Image 1 (cartoon, one colour):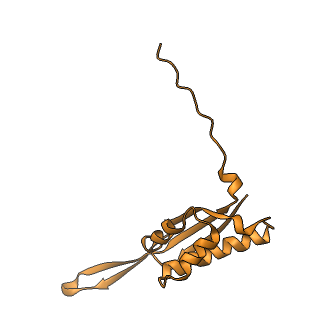
Image 2 (cartoon, rainbow, N blue to C red):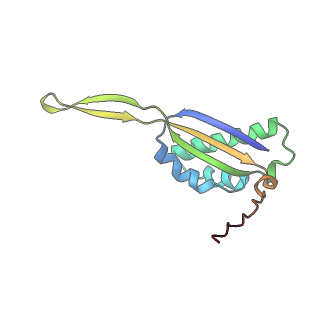
Image 3 (cartoon, rainbow, N blue to C red):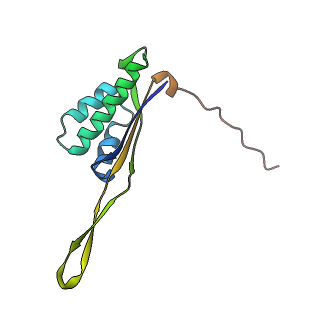
Length: 126
């Protein structure tokens, strides 16, 4: 079964969170939390909170074995931007884009991931 948590409109840009998302994708939940705990970046703290929330959702839905869960999907998407204007010299203006992001974390059981896809036989050109 899959257990999911979403943090919408996170206060950090997606590029700053994606490096930590790549770090924990495919790992065991305990290992992922251990990795994120020792980074002092804001993106790592936000991602750690979302992973903990997904683990709490699994506990709430009475997952049989919480220790066996792994991070099957981590997606960090861009959210709407706050657009501001910074006045500059001679009446010009620079645009400031305050970026936000949506973080989606999905935890899965290891049994689900071992689904095999049957191989197809190519058609003969005969």
